[in-house]
Amino acid sequence: MNDDLLALFFPEGMLDYFDIEDYTNSSTELQIYLREKDIPPVEYSHLNLQKRGFHTPKIVEDFPIRGKKVKLIVKRRRWAEKDAHLKLSRDWKLVAKGTRMSEEYASFLKALARY
Image 1 (cartoon, one colour):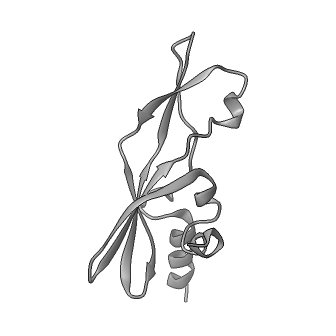
Image 2 (spheres, rainbow, N blue to C red):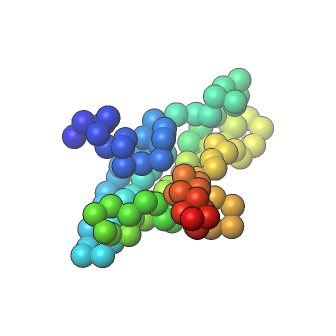
Image 3 (tube, rainbow, N blue to C red):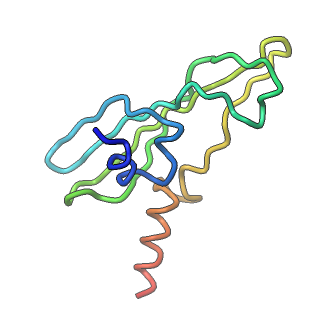
């Protein structure tokens, strides 16, 4: 499927760093499983990084689609510096503070509540 079309259904820039791994679709909910791509964080490009698996997946509620709840199940990658045994991961702001929703969706709902 066209990546430009798919990108419309996700928070901005998400598909630059995540691949769609799988999805489940029921009558009330769509769950989309995303896995962080094998792209080392730019801020650590001076280090000799190696992949070290994934963090526990995070569940993020996003905008409903066609009347269905949408949950993004996000697997973030772990990295380690080969020689210093330093463990790292990219700093993501996927979830709005105090919620389980994407920042974009939380802002949308907050704006609705003012009216």
